[in-house]
Length: 142
Image: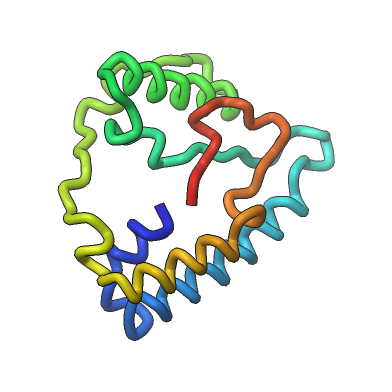
């Protein structure tokens, strides 16, 4: 998602390499904050993570796998938020998959490599990991 995000904002911050550095800084700050605030004073979990890329059909081989992953996400979030309804059959009815060209075509090889280096620097930092985050849909990639 990091590379896709930067490639979707080519004109931000004077170009993709600088924008990548800005986003890298935000991810570092956000990760430090989240890991420092795992639970509230009552012991309740304050935050959770769900990977947006795990909602995309590109991540799966069959329609059944896509539906299962999306159902897991909805059920997990409903449980985390304390909502009584744990399913939502039409939640992804209007979902539209990305039709953008591959990242390397949009960024070029040199810029893509700079951003790949940013990703390597963020390994172990982003995404933040909680012991409770056991769903496959919570195992995010950069």
